[in-house]
Length: 117
Image 1 (cartoon, one colour):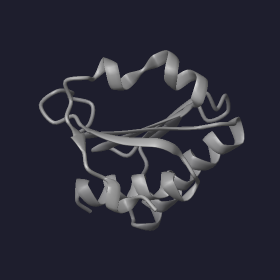
Image 2 (image 1 turned 90 degrees about the vertical axis):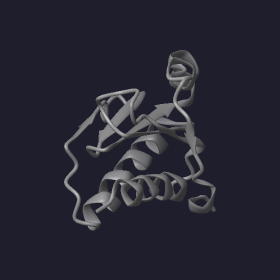
Image 3 (image 1 turned 90 degrees about the horizontal axis):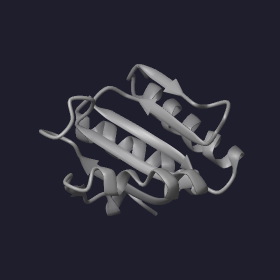
């Protein structure tokens, strides 16, 4: 599976669970952690968990092994490590506080609009 396919799968899965303000950052040459970050948020603990679960399940359906999922029980900031793609699923309040978009402001955004409904 290509990293772009994995990125699009994560974005579509988040959108399917009504994640808000979905963005994808191209981290190539900026971070050694991953090639892409997907950042989004939900408005409740249950929605945040549903978004993270959907990303994990859709990646696994394509035969991709999810390396790690952290923060699921607390549902404030769930990190889904897919290897080349890392999804950050925030509760709305936490997203505003951590503001990863500003932290990684030098990373270009990827156009993922065709994956969004």
